[in-house]
Length: 208
Image (tube, rainbow, N blue to C red; front, side, top):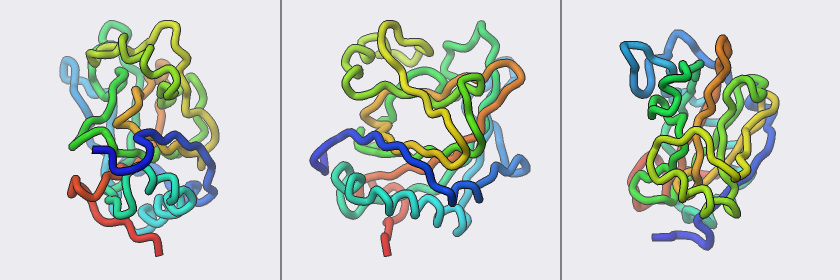
C-alpha cells in the first residue's frame, strides 16, 4: 500500500549538529554474517536522548517531504551506528553485511532511512551507494539476487563528503548497498529507519 503521493525519496543535506555524533567502539558488536569465523562489520543501537534529538532535527527540516511518502503519523526505530571494514576479494560478492545491492523490504517497501557521516568519507572508505530512480529499472534487472557489488552501465551515487553530511533515502524502493573500504580503511556511519504507522515498528515521531 502506498500511503503517500510518492513511494520514493532522495534528499541530501548537512547538519552541524551531527558533529556531536561519534562512534563508540566500546559498544559495538559484530554485524551481519561471518566468514571462517571473521566479521567485517560492527554496530550498536543508540537510544540516548541526545542522538535522537539530532536525528529529529534532520527530520524536521524535511518533514513535509517525508510525510508525503510514509504518511503523517510515521514511526521511528532506534538509531544505529555502523563500522564497516575491508572484505577480502574472494568473498566480496557474498552477502556479508549488506555490501551487495538490495532493497529493504520490511513490512512492505515504503520505509525510509536517514544516513549520516560520522567522519569525512571519500571513495577509498567504501561509501554508501545507491541507484537514482531514473536508472532503477535498468539496474534492477541485474540485481534480482543479492550477489552484485557492481552494476554494469548504470551510474551509481556515493555518499561521500564531510562529517555532518546526510542522505534521506527510500531504501525500500531503491537499490543500495554498503561500500567496501580499501584494505586498512574503515567507514563509520549512523542511521535511523522511518516506517508508516501501520507497520507498528518503532515509536511515533512527534515534531513539536
